[in-house]
Length: 312
Image 1 (cartoon, rainbow, N blue to C red):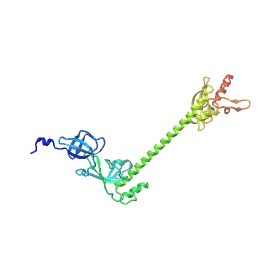
Image 2 (tube, rainbow, N blue to C red):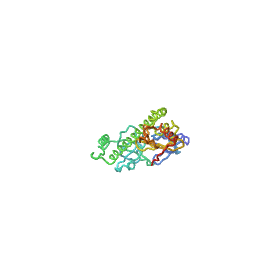
Image 3 (cartoon, helix red, strand yellow):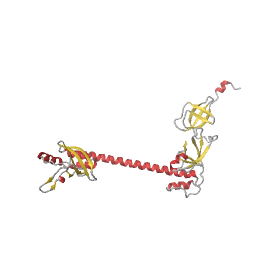
């Protein structure tokens, strides 16, 4: 007869089950509390005893007998999703509703594989195995590779496989869209960096006429501010008139003034003040640039002949 000492010394039983999170493990109707949890999802070997406690031993291979006592779900595996047999072919915005997340999927599976999973007590699906296809799988893969719009021309494609094709196609579209956005963002960053470098160089050269014109193509307001400052004028604002003209507002000798200039050359197109030679009728607006205009305005102020045109 076994003594109580011998019963206490009996070795723990070992089980292999999938761990998908939580402080407990379950097999059938039995549940054990974990002393220590694994660091990631996977198949593990646990030591269990009669006290409802389980001790983690370490990683394990998938238990081929695990499917016994668990409902099995068959269908098509695409990435980490299982498309069950009997799935419908929904509208594009309903794809996720006809697929389920599949845990512990074997590494190295093809783009779409036929297989089956076990339904756990918490309703999660854990991968068990792949299995032979029903026939049209290769043709569907070729249709995907050829970027066909549908598999309607392939005979005997079940709805679940049709959905797998649509799911793969949609995922490819999303991935390519993401790659296009990333490439566009990369190009934008490169262009911004190049523009920043040009601007820095132009700012260094803003003390020269050519430098200010280079700067105007990148930052017109900065170029206008630098040009006006040569004569002590204060830049106030600049508004685009059209693709080639800018209306500049500035302050000179306490007077608020405005003019229209070429956005690339800073050439004055409309001085905003009367620069007409009354003897010849010739307007002198275009004889000046944003650098020289305030000086001419200053001369008119000194002579008491300043006439300001108010635009609009």
